[in-house]
Length: 243
Ligand code: 13P
Image 1 (cartoon, helix red, strand yellow):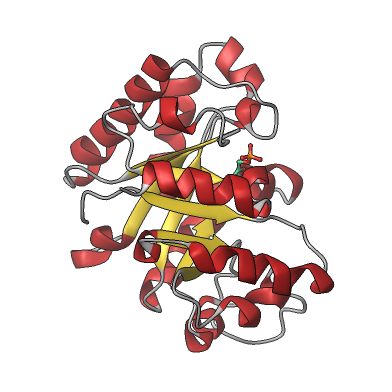
Image 2 (image 1 turned 120 degrees about the vertical axis):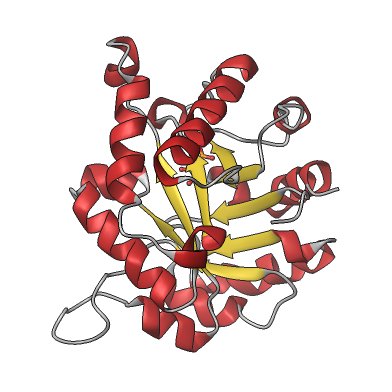
C-alpha cells in the first residue's frame, strides 16, 4: 500500500436520481483520484463507474448467487467493475443485526472476487463508557478476519469508526484516535502476523476538522459519511488528505 492517504465517501442511503448528474459534474475536479473511492447506493453504482475515482459497495451478501431476494453478491459487484466493499459498518451491525460470523463470510467472499475490503470496526457509546473499547475491537478484529490467507491481507483496510462519533459532530481526541489505531495495528500484527495494516478514521470527518485529523501520524486515510454527499466539503477533505 502506498503512503498517500485514501479517502472513501460512504454516501449511505442518500441522494435522488435527479441529483446525481450535478454531483458527478462537481466531482470531476478531483485530483489524485486514484486515492479516492465513492460508495453510492447500489442502484446508482452504474452512474459512478468509468469516472477517475474508484467505486465501492456499501454492503455485500456472502453467497455467490441464488435465491436471496434483495441481496447483491461480491461476484456481481466485481463483474460490474466495482473495486471496493465496505463490510461490517456499524449501521449494518446495529440495524440489520449482522454478526461477526456474517461479516467474516462477507470478507472471505469479497476477497475471493478480488474486491478491496474495508472492514469497519468501532465501539458504541455504552461500550466506551464501560471501558470496553479495547475488548470490543479485539473481538471484532479476531472474529471478522478469520480464515484469510496468502496475499488476502494486502487487500484489507480497517476503518476505525467509533459509533458515538458517526453523524454526531463529536470526535475523539486526536491522541485517542492515534492510540486506538496503534492498538488495532498491534492486534493484527500479533494475531495475524501482518504488519502495518492500513487503518482509516471515520466519524464526523468534515471540511472543518480535516486539517487537524490529517495530522494524526498513523492514520492511513478517512471514511467520510455525511460530508461526502456535499461535493464542496468532500473535495476539500480530499484536497487536504490526499497530497
Ligand atoms: P459521518 O461522517 O456522517 O459521521 O459518517 C461516518 C460513517 O459512518 C462513514 O462510514
